[in-house]
Length: 344
Length: 278
Image (tube, rainbow over all chains, first blue to last red; front, top):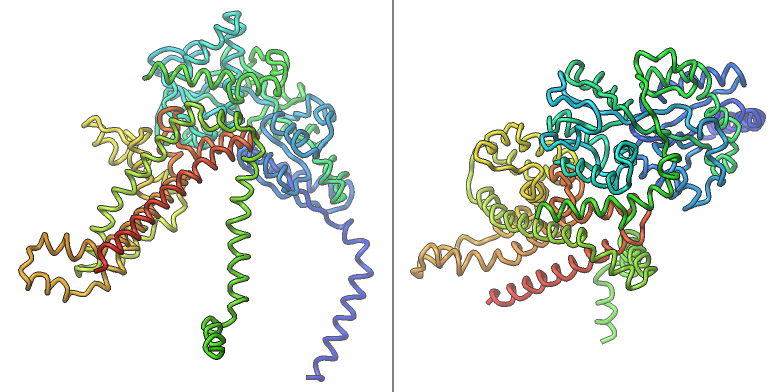
């Protein structure tokens, strides 16, 4: 025993000395971030994280590992509120990000003003995905209320993405028919044509693509492109409506977490670099609309021009829209009640 | 006397330790979560609570959840007994494999089960397209909910009845027929009473499991409010709009209702084992 206890002791001592000497440098040598995001950003951030690691290495000579977490936007926000150690969040809608402030005070009130474009480095919009050849001749939102059309969308109560769908249709009708009552009737007619109401966007995609149910799928533009590219090239077509909502998926540093972990500098750089030309091109490659108009122009054949409205202009922001439309007793609950009464 | 008492204390070695551990275990895993549920609910006023749990959409979902769970558990009661009987009483090739397959619903992620079922039973699916010819639609109807709940509840009845059936003494049956009882009488007066407590346990487990099921149902039900929306989905919807109190309130109602029903089943079980044990 003593014969090899001695060398081990020496080794331990040497390691301890070595560690204590190198300890001050350890933190500077590598750093790790956790980006809590929603489902369809998976491919984009995989590529962006590699790009950022190189970028950061050459600028600061520090290795950075970005870990990703993906899921439904609302449940991701709840995980962070409940203590998931996110350095940055990149979610589907400002309402979910704002919940970090309202429910847990993790970010300051002005979080959305800290980065350009309402803190949305890339945007998207709501489009209509139809089957090849567009057999039902669906050209705009108006066609979704026809009796012979079946519409697939997830449930706005449980899916953040579906709230954009609903608001896009509402905004279109409000502009075209001029009153809240007309817009209510219009959206009600659309939901009368919904045969299956999936809780989340991924499930709704399955219903439309795998089950082959429905004539039109209301989807985020980037997800519609993914469906066309990955799930069946030549089987689907994207119809861009005349008017749609500008979907702004915002990003923010989670202040309380980065200050505790000492990662603020790299976390802020990580988000700011999303606005660089390289990152903007990556966003375009992964079917998000780049917020930088110059880079967006490079993708103009992919993203047709749409007459956009924003949630702030038409609905007065997420807080107001959520209360009026989606919370208990809101317009959406009344729409469901009306439909149930009609079917009875 | 003293001697006997100290001996009795030693019947379970380390009684304090095991009991203490059990209590801690139950507290961490069960009492604290349920306590949290009740705490959230208690933060609401009566009017708020009542409004949350009595909304027509919520009431429609209770009806669906409880009815579909009861139907599914009843189907499993009948066919679970049949499967257990076949597995215990007959020899056939691949019996062990069939026996092992029974546990599949325990192991398979329920989302996978839901997707598999909807792939089979959608009107374009392998089975669904033929049923569709007869105008029977399963996926995206209430039938679909029952189907998913039946699937996940299958092992409970089989696994509770199987051991009782295995221990069943064939002599009792022989005695019954030797004394001139018909097959039906033997079944009703000899076999069935012995199995009844196990059947009820299996039924209760399958029922309770079905009430809480979420993963498989959301894929096959279509989730149409007032029609095919189960209560657990509404709880998720409440949580999704950060209405934790509302979610907890509905959860509490489910908990109480399930508790009462399980209590009734336990009482029936106690009654049947007393009634038939002599």
